[in-house]
Image 1 (spheres, rainbow, N blue to C red):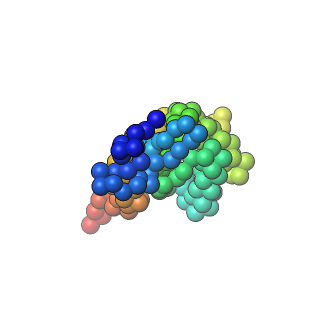
Image 2 (image 1 turned 45 degrees about the vertical axis):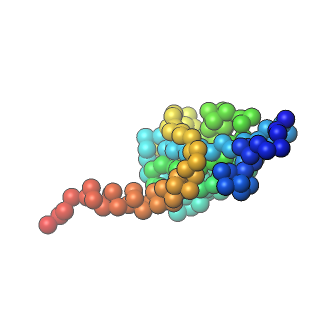
Image 3 (image 1 turned 90 degrees about the horizontal axis):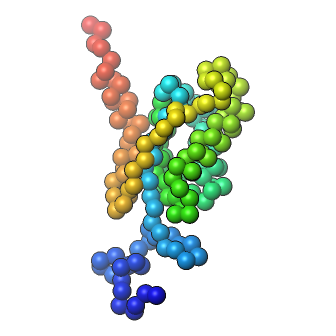
Length: 162
């Protein structure tokens, strides 16, 4: 039970109520993760209708598991997501679900993928995950500009023809 003068869990240092916290029946939580994952062989597949389709599929799957997408960017060969995953669910369990179900849904929608990827393995085996902590705004900004940074990096790596 919380004492009347304890401000650690519901208010910040200035006494302002914290809006980042979520709650379950007996739990208050703030679990945000920066997750990066890529298609198998890091193939560049996120263009036009596939980009829209994967965005729609990932949003739908996150909604089904009550995972909140705070920010997401789909680069041509990988995806950055800032997710709020409830503590009752492990990150690895959720990523297995997200990558597995999205693979099946993509193969249903785009039959040509089965010729590029074997055994319905659309995603790389692993992924990158980092806890966000109090850096939510900074990570959101990083993810927002990730596509632009990737394009700039590609332009710098193209050799000068003249």
